[in-house]
Length: 117
Image 1 (cartoon, rainbow, N blue to C red):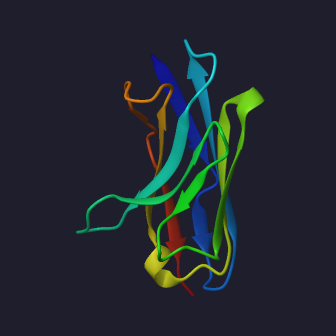
Image 2: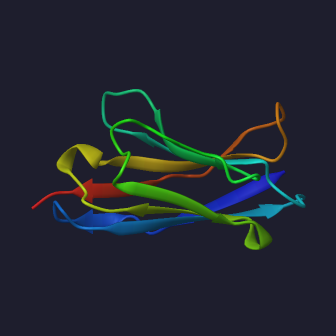
């Protein structure tokens, strides 16, 4: 079992920045896949960014060039640096991890990000 604890959400003005963190704990030694997803009201959950244990990253088109995902594998923690935030980035952000390829997938509880003046 894996537990995920997210932090760093909040209210920010357009053009501002936030950094999200997600720490994984439980019966794990390492984590293959770590990602950030978001879900806005009335919309489907979408991938924001992901990173594998090998360092391969993937970004959603709407956040490329503005958001950066990184990880500290020793701490089983993934980060999302969000810059130049826009009102359309407002959503609940979820951390999702898969300890092994094709294995179980775990979700965090979500953290609200609101971009508004």
